[in-house]
Image 1 (cartoon, rainbow, N blue to C red):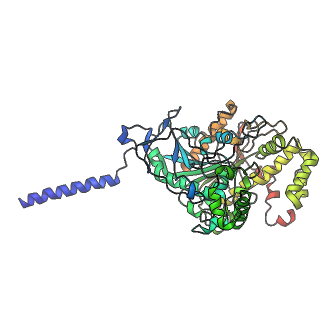
Image 2 (cartoon, helix red, strand yellow):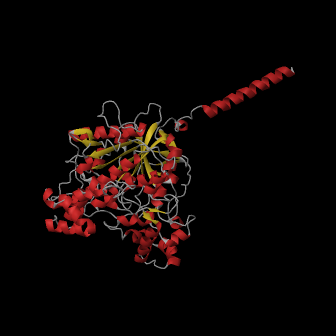
Length: 553
């Protein structure tokens, strides 16, 4: 009798253990299992959310909070976790952009960039939200994840300006992110540093981006994404920020591949961060300009100001004021130092630029806002003003007579110095530690963002975005451009999935090496590697080898 009872007890114990073991090892049920298998309802670590069905059969979730509102005493502090909620939260509309001025600078009052945030601006500090797109079918497998950091000089833009549906339809989960901008995202000040645990300030926007990546790591599986295949990507300032996260110790493990589009930080000519002391000096000047000059009371004074006061000084030329800085824990050393010391998050990288980057800035600042085209004399004067002792060498390398117009000569200088050659230099630097795939977008007929009759814009800065993200506000792509768009979205998706953009059916894209120096040209009539990039963009002039550096300078 006792042996029978013992056997039954043993069976019950073993059965319970087996059930527990299965519970620990079996894959979790779908996130919507408790809601009648409704794929539009998903459980996050803060609560349930309801998204919307996309036109292509996919799903979109907009306005997902990844951090607490950075308001009141949380202004100029690291982001904090978002609050939980009960019930099902509607996430079917985008959140407000982070505070910024509208960029409605065209003569007709239109915006100079196509995003909705550039038309409306914002004064809402409760803005730390992200958006998620998923494809129609996943086949039950976890998908690669692309996390997009928008551009805008760290002073403009929003994640909601970008429609991730086209990239998601290729077979991945796409996330676009808001982060604090301008003074609210990047102000460094001695008073803020004094109250900080690491005695530093600034880089709050970078901290927001990393908070979003941590939220994604914990939650993206509920949307069908693979938290072990996260690609961090961005364009312009978003690209430079991506470059900074590669050098950031606090970003370790948060992403597994990177895409840099027209923005570098680790090489000569790139968007290198300021030192903390330089950023604090800029911050003191800014604080004085808004009536908070007294250091002992500056922090409280700044926190008491309305957002309208904090964004009103962010004009079209002020974005450079809001550079990240080295000093806060997120970025303890300059990227070039981090690379030299091997203290980087070396991951496979897809990196590049557009052939005519600076033509957009020439069109905007010279044609639209500057009153008309440059003459040979005004071109030479502008180069002397901007290049000082090196101006004669610049004019010898880029004579106005060698270009169709002085505007295009000036554009070539800016393209090569600020974008093309730094992008190539970053590829050369990265390739010693991880696979790199370098590109140049080169569609001379890309749909323009602004009218500028004196500057044919060609493959201008940000022109490739319309080939990755649908933009209803711009002229539709031609059939040849749509084919290029399909090739590019294939490349980007395959890279996010595997760290290599190549797949059967697309033109072969060679891995970048400094010796081969092969860069993939992305054009409607040609998708193939070139070895002529450095010559085309005068990179030996801008970044001479150590042996020739003294002679060139």
